[in-house]
Image (cartoon, rainbow, N blue to C red; front, side, top):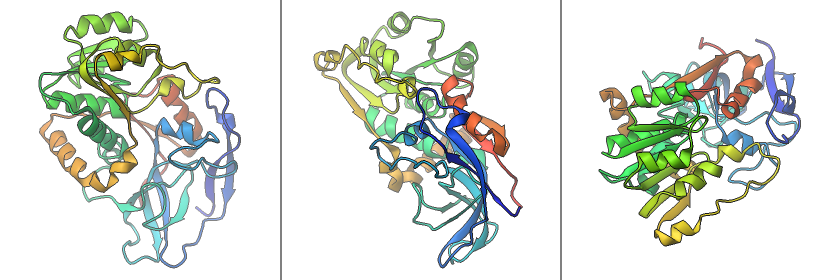
Length: 339
């Protein structure tokens, strides 16, 4: 290749993100300077938080500017290195964005620049061992603090984060109920991920089904969705329950601010706790999580699912799969093979 293909943020979304929010461009392949490496992206990660990065508002990271390469996590291969810590051919994980090539340093980007350990497939490094797996691990264990015998409910349960959070709760001896959209996702949760019960929010009354499936009420709620599902679950929290706010995908594409749950006083009545978190605060402990997650995967206690799309032209449409419910598990896109 002699050009760097890119997808830039063209305009900020209003409502559902579409292909028109992005602009295709080509630029020269960048040249690494002192201490820098040139990386060719091979795989891209797609996460609901990218929708928030497109908004011009204060957040835990600055918004993507109009005309900038759309931000995204990636796995790539070092093409040229002026840094003694990296060699041509190394597979690395970084925040490479929607482009073929980037120049970076170990301390740049949200996640820095890290070598992929030998023997770990990119799909695994970007899912169960990646940001989504770490989010599930620390969010559930540090904030949810599940205890054997408790009831744990997970919304967005068939997603990359929710599916791992629910399985960790099962491994810890909890009874796990997953909320997901569609028969296929619910079957996977029940038959493959071995959840104790599932609720299809597209065809079932979530409030009523929670009452049936959680007769002893809900001790931990790991929420990726917000909105009506958060409100419904707050109706069933137990005394001293822990509500972990991981995401709110139900409102990410709203054109107006969604109303808050009307039943927050249940937290007071039940002496419960509701807390949000961002996984970047836990990155210093990443290897702790990866070591335990690896043991669970190797033993067969933990399974993971990836949805892999192909081709540079499909990048904008692949992001939209997250918000239309088309993906099952971690959403990835493959751009190229390593040399």
